[in-house]
Image (cartoon, rainbow, N blue to C red; front, side):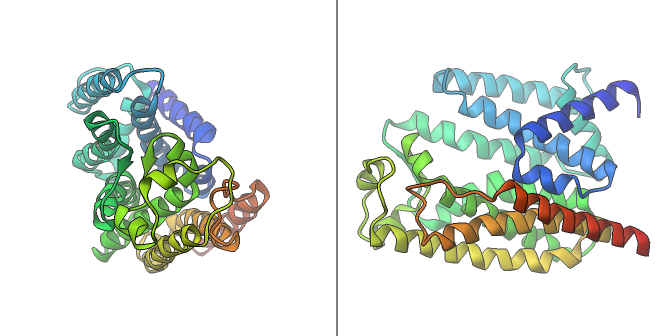
Length: 302
């Protein structure tokens, strides 16, 4: 690996360490080449998200910046010289691990969904049905899973559908954790059909007093979506034995941390309004330590 590429991966690792939070703990449990590739993909995702979410710019300005960034990436992946370290690292990772560029295009498409919907109207950004929400979760999370398993390594094609469903579990967990925060940003990811089934209107959810305790109906709604997430987490258990042995500890760490986050929401009686659920650092470190021990055991057996 030449010096420019080494520096590019170092930049991506620094971004991941600074921003990834739950993800970064799993990265540490990967062998270095795979860890570099995962950090590169994360840095790419982070840049797309930042361009999409930067509220100091109008939606039109954000869209223009994102479009220009996408064009630059498409040039870089075709071999055009670039000084962007993230593009350098991602291009190399895609070549090393046979990651289809189309998957990264889908990932960016997920990022632009929020911009496109927000530009369409001043009404709250909502999803009518769970299937509509699933499509969004697929683009912003399942696609990440499909990229990651190529880095982790797998041979059984069943891994792809299981990775898709695992991504849905992660994104549903994020959505439940961020209900109050998203409402403050004029976004309601809880499907309207589910809201209405529990007698909750979008307006009432948007108009909640900050920090106020949830109603029985709101807690039942959160529980219903948490139950759906639990179903998708079962796919993660099935996925683990299908990926390369040396990558399993990293995936185990990631799944365990995210599942613990969902369980904290459940243990809080599905109250995601009075405080934001999180997994304490000490618990993440304990999970990481177990993952590192699993990794060492795999290496000893190799």
